[in-house]
Length: 451
Image (tube, rainbow, N blue to C red; front, side, top):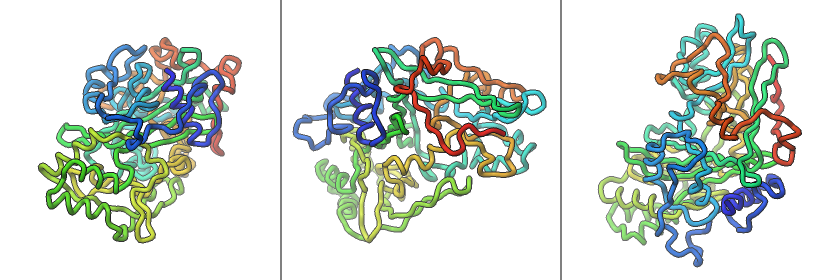
């Protein structure tokens, strides 16, 4: 527990986002970084002991233990420290889109003539287009995938697997619940809101998935503070020279790897790169910079580089550029083909790891579609709440079936999960029981909207 509390304290300090409550999450700590640097002389063989993600012993399993075991078997090397402690904690809950089905609220209606409720992201396009002709194409890039902010946040990739994790904030040895309340400002607005306690950590572990074989390449974390979310991203090679060093140390001397090392250490101008929104006007201003495309690798060359993803300590890439050259900055590597350290088409080169960078998207979780589209005045809101997209407290079987089809469309199907309540992980919001020292609402200019 001490290591996890240290994580919260450190991320809060790193993000300059306020203080965690005294005696609660973040009340102890004392390191000066999120993870020990791989070059720290005090860290001896950081990958000698594999990361051990427990598959049993939790108060509640969101993901089936067998599926979590598959994830655990492909976990990356994370040095001893707060992040590793969190990942190895049985208090950390793991989930994916199959175990916590993504969805969004439709809070407009009277639940008599106009239905309200929770809708899966896999909703049948016809259910939208009947009410708003062409509406599905405006807000979804494909069935199950929102256009917000630019269709596919990782880029035009087809070889990525994402697994999410949630560490509930702790106080006095027990989890602090996510608090929720229902807001009914008028007869046509009926929305559930929720708020995470200070110290909550959400994250995701990203894998390149080719033919069912997973290779970890990134870990992302968001830690709730009093004024927002502190962020970090861990990668095995934050800089181009880090990968060049690792290839040379591993004995990579083939013509392809020699050419790659020369490229990584080179100072040739970076190619121009931009990332901007295609839909939801104004939600995501275009970001420009540079990109270095890593060539595709095959055979033994790919095996060597992919092996480095499992045997190189992951460390913070916060504020670190992959490469700067020709007056341009690339914040992450790109890939022209398969067999390297990031997915083909990976688009993070224009995204710095920082709070302002990440808040550009997350600040709109739960925002009504009408703010972007006048013709979708009465349809619903972006998925998520409290600046987290992937989590919600609703019973899955009440709004979606195993095929991703809507359940109970014509009446309010939102039920707070009984298992989350029984485990003490969610609770109705009572200000006197849930004080501002532990719960601080984030308010945007659109918060508390009404239809």
